[in-house]
Image 1 (cartoon, rainbow, N blue to C red):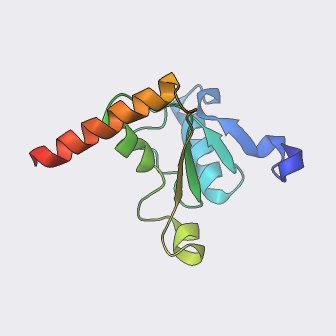
Image 2: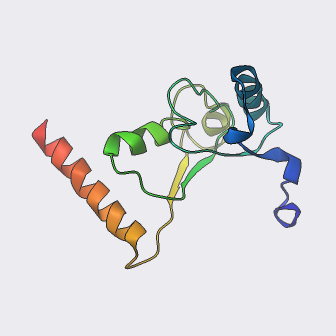
Length: 123
């Protein structure tokens, strides 16, 4: 990743943290800017992860089955305490979802979208 200006040691996977203490340290490193890219699954980066201080984007590499999972994922970066978004991006964060046309991912995203519409219309 040096070609893109991000040294390899600043790219981490949350799964590397084998203990709660290591996980908290990794999240602190993310907030302090020592980690610039953090990969993790919905389950590993769910409730209680407050690593949003410097987030400018969230990239969804797959589609979750439940709208609540997508909301949970986005909630990791779209929240109070995001200092970079507040200072430089009018409190906005990029949400990027990857899927190939006519692929299973695209189909799953269509299902997810319909589930969200159904949930909103029931309220």
